View 1 (cartoon, each protein chain N blue to C red):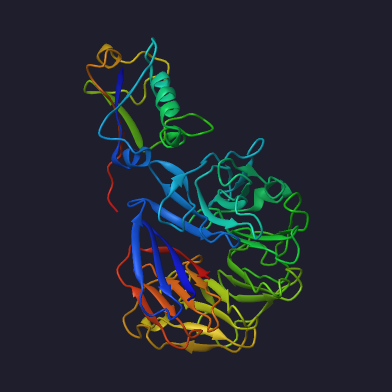
View 2 (cartoon, helix red, strand yellow):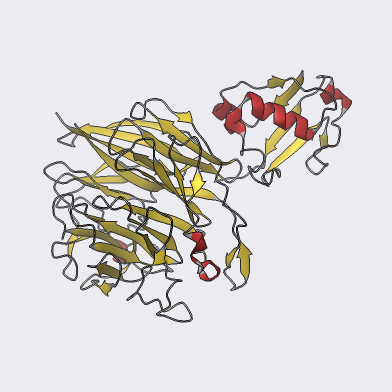
Length: 98
Length: 371
């Protein structure tokens, strides 16, 4: 299972806890994980990726294994540690005040 | 005993304020969707338990929430607002052309006859409709396709479609208003549209009498007389007696004719309310005095309503969607401020009391009169 950690507002929206798990068949990529996440939690559609362009929303980043994966191609394989479930994929909102 | 439910959208969540018909004691529920901007919450006129809310965030985009029990519980519905066809371009702040980009839903207007049908006014300006309780949304693209889009331009808050008025006497007729494009009308249920801005004058645009490009802040109508419209423009308070075909100024003796909201008394079609703001560069009340102005003559003659409102050192704003009226026998008037106060008057504006004082900045106020 792939582990995903969502920012607090999306956890509330999806009514999930600190971490969610989704089943993804190889190859495990950003796109495959987000597809599985949105299939499991349809309310997240449009909140991480734009509905129409499927581009990552500009104030969100993807981190895993102490790497910034935000600008990796969506079909590039994620690190093995994410694919094996040893490490989570982190969806992180930009810090801001207000 | 009848009562009222006040639906408040703020920068940090939604609040539901309820009272009986006396409107003296209030129960405050919220925040709902804490931390999110709630641009608008509105109930269905035919099913008061059916509410729609626009929940939005610069981080996470748009969510639409629906309640079927008067705001006790909520469930997210559809949030896909896809422009029909190639979105095209509009004018940017610097006069260049800029692609149409969806930002958020500003205003939700439930149908007068069907609780599952609801209209959404969005930024960048367009009108969408759902006929399935908000699950799916389709653009009424004839508005954007009118042909004048390249001359529409954003105001400081973006290029938003913020006003939707459904004509209760004619199901085909809808008025919308866009900042900064102007007012538009359809007579065929949204298939085709035309601008209805004759008589508006805006000094800040190259042609002050242009067909489009006017920064209309708000339009209001009384349901018994839907061909009479009242408008708060960027500057000027205006009136149309012919469904928008022509407009004339009714600012009269107002201390400033800049402002955002405008509304009409529930039982007196010629009683109109505005909140004058000092200027377009100083968005606070003149002289630090928060005053609602009421005209009982359909405009031009205005009286200041001050009893219960702060009359010194008050520098809040009242945004365009943040005023509403109830329809109890003694008409209630409500407005919210960017300072987080929601004021209510149970006597048509003669006296005011704060329902709550310390909410986040108020973006919108709607009222439901309950049986």
